[in-house]
Image 1 (cartoon, one colour):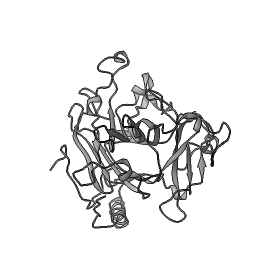
Image 2 (cartoon, rainbow, N blue to C red; image 1 turned 60 degrees about the vertical axis):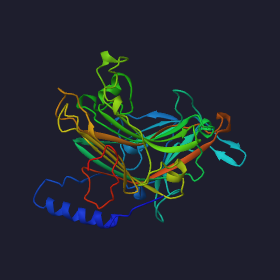
Image 3 (spheres, helix red, strand yellow; image 1 turned 45 degrees about the horizontal axis):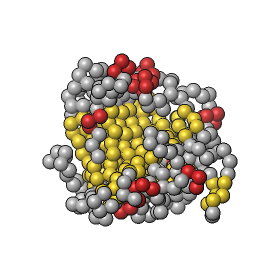
Length: 371
């Protein structure tokens, strides 16, 4: 895989940015546009695992973090799984089940480090997703721009959908989502994504990783799958205007600066940590249609759009991104349900900034990119 390194190390860039922010903050409440909004800081958090198979934790609905079993620097979480903590089993040499989510040192980028370990249980079907864990955070204010950074590592022998291996299906792993939650929805369940409650939290941006088989040569292509949605009022549920942004969900294959699309294995099953950056920017005004999405992998631009109408004309000016979650559910069924097969991917070094840092990354323009 071709990779290009920045001229400055990430540590140098963070140090320089931190110095600038400190200088700007002297005698003033104003922070730089690219201030650090959130740091998951997994390395310095206590070990955590979900203790319930299914939980939708509203925010805030608890008296203490210990009472709610809150993970690290997050303030809510959602879990859905079938095999834990309902008992144990042994299939061959595999013993389980594992909790669908845990913060631990099982996988780390550095000695003594930690990560969020997400387990994918092999069950589900059409319109029936498998296991899921999401860790969520309320920003407490609206941001027009988010620059997201994290590292992801898939199990070296991560197995894709059974039908995918036969050349006729796809596997999807949801990883990140950010959205606007209005004041009228404060204190309610953050993990209601459909129906009236879900529509209150609009617009929404989700990024999935997907592997899709090209039937002509049975080659499984690694793809970026964004879901960019704005919800219409309740009375339009089921109409053609159900999601007014559904035409902006444009998949992009991963090329890492080359001309050929790479496979899932070539990108994510190398045994190495893969760096992910996401830039999302609200449109300049309701109806302007100039919202931004950029997705970077290992400091190379893989996807860019500058024409997203996050807000419809006539909507409020105060709309911004004020909530996000990391993790998600999977549509990936490599083996029969009775095999109780589990596999993992890990996420670490999650940081979110209020703007794109001034780094010297290499840009490989796509057809939707600005020059």
